[in-house]
Length: 285
Image (tube, rainbow, N blue to C red; front, side, top):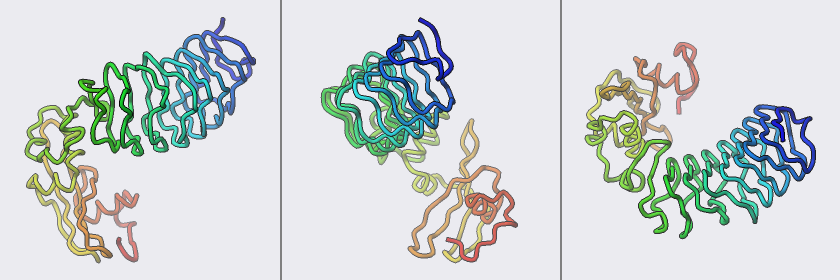
C-alpha cells in the first residue's frame, strides 16, 4: 500500500495507506476506494460526489462546500464535515463509530445520522437546524452544542461532557441562559468562559445589566445612538453601538471593534467602511 497526493494516481477498487488531496481540484473519486488510515479532502471546493461504499480510518471533508451528498455505506471512525453547508440528508446506511463526528457549521442538517454508533466526541457547533437528539445516542466524552437550538440532551447522554464552541460548560450555561446574569459573567475569571456566558446572555441584555460607560452619543433617523463600553478583566473591552430601527422602533446593539471612538465611526464599520468620511447613506437603517 502507498500514500497518494495526486488525484491522477487513484485507481478504482484499490486500497491505499493514506490519501491527501487537500485543496486540490478533484471533483469525484473512483469507485471501490478504500483508505486504511487518513483520507484528507479538506478544502476541495470542487468535490461534488463520493463513491458509495467509501471506507477509511478517518475522512476529512471540511471546507468541501460543493459536496451535496454523502455516499451510501460510508464507513469511518473519524468524520469531519466542518463547513459542508450543502449537505442536508444522511445516507440510508453508514457507520461512524469509536472516534468523532464533527458537523461544525453544517447548517443544512436537522439531525445526526440514525446509524451513528458510539463515538467519543460529537461536535454540533453551529448546526442551527439541530433541535433535538435521539434517545439512545451514545457519546463517551463530550458533545459541543454551541450555536445549536438544543434545549436539552436525551437521557442516554446523562453525564456526558458539554462544550460551547470548544469551551467546557455546564447544563445551565448550555440550556438555561436566562439564569445567567451580567454580574456573574463579569465576575468570571476565565476569559473564554466569560465570552460564552456573554454570548448566552445576549449582548443586548448583557449591556443593559452591566452599567456600561458611554463613549459617544448622537442621533440618526431612528433616534438616539450610543457607543458603549464594558471593561472586561484580562480581556479586550466589549464595545457596542446601541441604535434604534427607524421602521420598527426596536432597540438593539451591534458589537464593534474596541478602538471605535464615535457612533458614526462604529456604524460605518458595520457597513464595511474603515473611513467613516466615506460612509454617506441616503437613509440609515
